[in-house]
Amino acid sequence: MVVAFVKHIQAALKYRGGWKGLFELGYTNGDFPFKMGTYKGCDIAGNRYYENLSDYPVGQHRWVEPGDIHNFDSSQVQPEWQGWLTSMHDATPEQDDEYINEMKKRIRPNAPSDAPYDHNVGYQNPVFNFNHMHVQSQIRSRGYGIGNSIVGLPAHAPDAYYTQPGSPYNPAFMKKLEFEGDLDEATGGGRPYKNDKWKDRLMTVAEKKALEPVNDVEFVAASVANLSPREEAILARGGSLPGK
Image 1: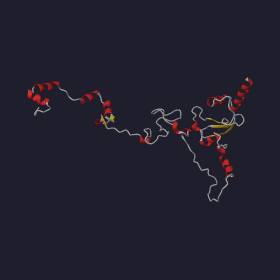
Image 2: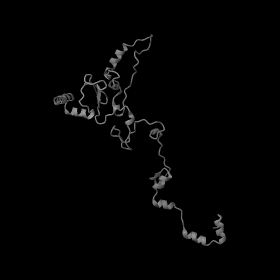
Image 3: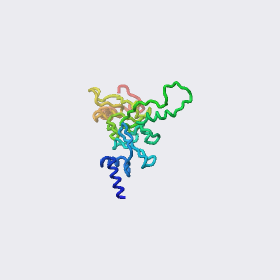
Image 4: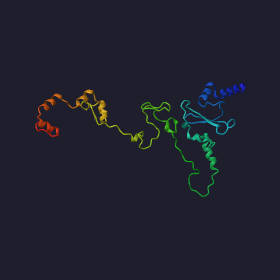
């Protein structure tokens, strides 16, 4: 058993080109025994695709080794490789034209046609997504103004994940900030407020004191002392005194 283990490590070191490649494989896939197979190709994100039809059962015979070993996301597998990786077909992207030409030989038209095309595979423009991620739901900021270092989103960059119309997170439906006034408007501005509650928080103690009603106790006491009983009765019933 020890001899077989040593032989396997030696074969893996040779296949991976040294200890660095072997450690990288253990860090990403973490499989043991270490997978070894035929290199089939690479995509725009740097992901490498392998196949081994001899040593592994169907479902495990094809695998991908990520280009970004630290922050790999399954949505970074490119669409042109997805069908091959999941065994939907056996043609890699480099073999697409050859595969289509081979399949066209099996097409049997059942009626005359003047159509200029001899197959139904449409043209697809190249698609480029942020960080090669085809599912954009992960591309969002982790907090206000800090971005997302996991997917490489810079600070203050707009999020890419979908928000439905009417959502408060949809930029088109965000309510714009509008101010009602400014406490320092006379001096050029500096303390704008959007409602009375915000205004109350911005006001100083002296400004709040200046808005309080004047309560002169001595004046009130003097005015009440000069009233006759008849005048006091009129005021008690809610009436008013002319000249006072």
